[in-house]
Image (cartoon, rainbow, N blue to C red; front, side, top):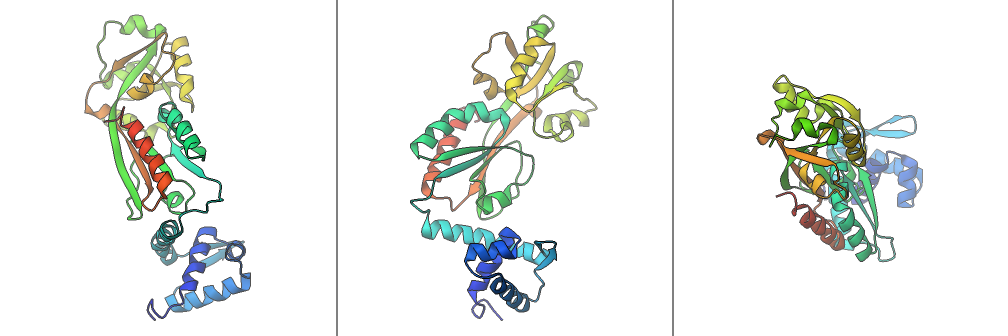
Amino acid sequence: MNLIQLDLNLLKVLYVLLQTGSTGQTARRLAITPSAVSHALGRLREALNDPLFRREGNQQIPTPFACTLKEKLVPLFVSLNEELFGEDENEKRTFRVVIPPAINTLLTPVLADKGEYYQAQVQCIPFERRAWRDDLLEDKVDLVLAVGDYQKMISALQYELVGKTRLVALFGNPLRKKLQERDSLSMSELSQFRHCYCHPWPQEINELDRQMMRDGESRHLAFICNDYGQLAPAVRAAPFMAVVPEPWFINLADKEGLFILPLEGDKVEGGVFMQYRRSTVAWKMRFIDAIRRKLQEYYV
């Protein structure tokens, strides 16, 4: 059998089943009966000579071959749907962006402004250090922003480096006397201070700390948080240091009692990346372009 001989409606069933992992949910999505889904799956198994799924409880778990098909089938269906049909004019507009905490403050004004302009609900999703490819392909998110993070390339997705910036050491009055004569700090000197740490991933996989560990150095973490808004009060109150992207400090509304020192060397340069579907509808592409332009004011 070849593609010409295959009933293409079967691929639609496979596409939805790969997304839902449930015969019942697939039937509801396609407005058919669960037995029709099971019948279609049986025909697919025969045509493709693979079991495609194994049942675990109420879930259909794809086989390795089915996972390979998913990488090709899901981008194709999402792309065709967006390019051929766009979006339902009566459907509520939603723009979902995955955003690291370090650039939240920088982007909030443009997200709010463009969300209002396009009459869309903007959903800011916390960044996690993991692959976001399936979330994008399955239309669960529209844009992923990542700081110094690589995502696997795939033809259905656009992956690009927006620009780079440098990290700086942030501190407050408790450390000012000790550092007031300094113009910069080396990476090795960071180990001499107690640090605030604000990343949604463990220290051992943070790129700066990995670079330091390769040189036999490490930072002592005294204050760990998930909200960048906590950094300024922390370094104002205690002799702590925080390593932050320079654009975050530039956009900080209240800099009173705060100071920064540049860090030396090329290992403290960090990039910001974006990833989105190539087939994204026009208004979302314009939204993404506005975000890109805003980032490029600080990341060059």
